[in-house]
Length: 152
Image (cartoon, rainbow, N blue to C red; front, side, top):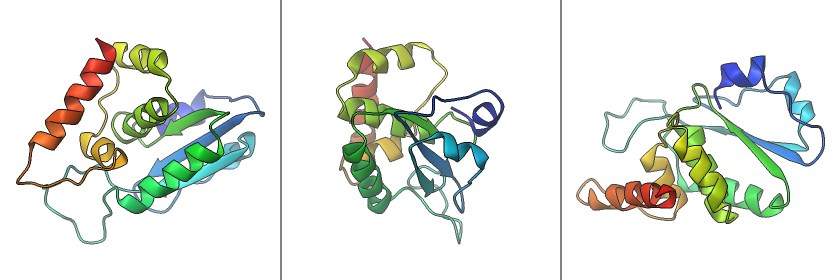
């Protein structure tokens, strides 16, 4: 979900819902955070591994993966909202991972059928405990195929 859509349209129930909010820099907080039981704030860029590094920018890391895993474990019985600025790459990668972790295959299939999302494959690879290596491009293909297979 994009930040714009989240701010303008989304009104979650007050109970049994948590959120993961992703921004590129410092966590973005607003009054709607009070609607959730808890919010995990993350700040990382949407770059793919091997793109030119920009000083001061942060790619998704193992630290964020650990934070997400702990959040999923803590709130496995809740509904999740995940959003970032555009809602097209980072949040779908995290959302797919949450659904996969919780065994929600049917919802994964429904999300993929919309065609609106293209998970950042490098974020998804890292979430799945793999290390990106520019000398081993096959790892990206493995997880691209996994996402595609889930939906077939």
